[in-house]
Length: 425
Ligand SMILES: [Zn+2]
Image: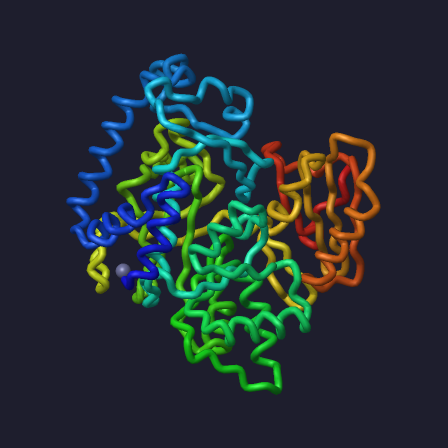
């Protein structure tokens, strides 16, 4: 890496107290260890984690023998937050909010080590497409990737990242985004699959022949990348698209290689399953606020004994599923993941929970508030965002109306009423 890029990342680490560069260097080597060595490493890390962290954390000492069969939900963390701090961890920890795809927003605590790992994992995914530290990157995202306070502005400048809002994607916005992406010689685009796909669709139907001579690739994150979207994006930008998947509170970080395999970094997390095949993850990186057998809300299978032509030994995630019921599909067959709504509503602290109902004609959002009503301007804002991004004949927002629940009484975020469900009772 050149001196300029080195300075940028040294400054990031120095300002934030992180060690992103060192962690990335470690992962660059580690990824090529063989799968047996990596499985052993993952096991050793898990054992050390259990030995060191669990006895120091009141929540787990109270659980006692039930630890191995316990399942940690967002609800449990919310109800018992103070007892999740490890007494053995003396360094700084700080609060982080997460939307996730299932569950109301959760506040948990993270560390500089865990943050370094998260960023190193993302950079590693970018590197699979030829990204070099310091390259110009475009984020196409909502608030979860592109926060706007001063701290984040400085951080993004040092990372050499420009943020483009995934919520403002009318034709004029897209045109100005594309001009900026081309003029700034952007090397990599990172963001939500559905948002990047919308830009791709614009390019494909446009009379203008856009070209991206500096672009090395596109990394899609936070949503499932459908085959159709991948095709659209690759065709429009004329570069390869790789998938990246991260569940930060669970320490899960996965990236796609040139051979289409989604490798996950098993030295940082231990994956188990509940009876229904839902992924339970133990985050081995966060030692301040230990999360053991955490219910991620995701479903996928893991192939441990990989022999990928890319020579990486990290296991492979396959059959990513279980979230398809969380998809909203509009009149144009555009697919929007429930995570989109999570991000949209997350910053409004009056919204306790939401549910999205849709059929061929109408999109209805049910909001549970801690107050009587939504201010007029918020109401208009949400409707504008929804209308801008999805195509229905009719849109509605209902306040404090009971949610429709599934048979197993779990909250459902998205319900397709065309499939037989009735309106909330
Ligand atoms: Zn591979």
